[in-house]
Image (tube, rainbow, N blue to C red; front, side, top):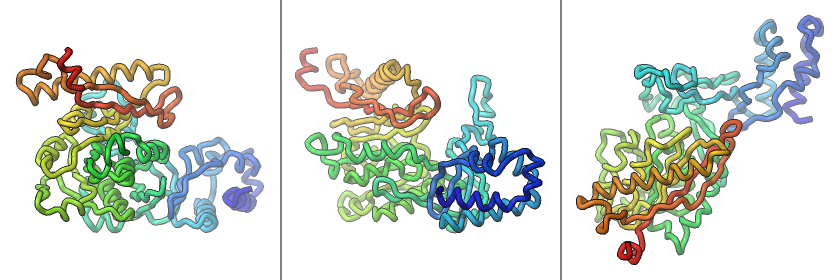
Length: 404
């Protein structure tokens, strides 16, 4: 028996037997119905969503008098698990009104309630001081300082976040590890120390940190949620990577003659919409190592960023766009073909903008597009996989262009 189960059993034994008899539940039922899994993000214990939703626990919690009896349980669990805080996890709502459902009947006004910051507004604190709730979308420096922060280490990379305001997806660990081993981030394909990676939905640095750990010279990040930006900044510092945060109305310039400044700004975080990415990167092209990898890590679909990703890739060398998408398992091959076709069309559109005489000197795109790999990261729902498509966009060999 685990320490958590033993603590739970001891607490249940202190409940009045007549209470359990009245509710028609037994100690064994309560013990068996309590979740066997949990997450430990020091100094917080995170229990699963269904922790108190089973029939025995629902009955008990509703009738327990006084309610402080539950606090006694939380105190004992906190002590035995060596944590200061306990909370119940919850799914990230798609809408800020917490309905969590999107359909064709949503109006324009309700669309404005979309939870674009991916805030975990349904997290349920049980024990410990999680700080005062900040309702403003622009927290002050003091708000950020006073908030409750937790941390985790995956693949040797440190990450930190404020659980009341920022999500953390443990299931992305395999994709983070895959980035560290990508052949396209290693010689002879590519020298990471001479390239830039872009993360268009950076969060707290889930994937951006893996690019940095893989040796990429510079990682440019776009993120709207100020709490995620702060977590990314703290996490970068925790990994001893120099980081700079640029606000949406702030001018960011790297002096081409200031080599030290270029090297010290290892991770740059733009707290603004990623629609500004092209403008920012075009202004830095001359001093920035070529952008060779672009991560589009938004679920259920990152489609809104695909054109931006194609545009910011180095126009001479090209590179890889990593498209994150929720896909029905039975449709993976079909969706792969559809996404590839859509990216091909975007490449032609971008090239048409760059060259007035059309996409390529011979009426054909100068770039060739192929899907090198589809990674099935994790199950998102029954029959639905979180997939990452590695789309290569590279100059077409000269002989192919001539022969066409």
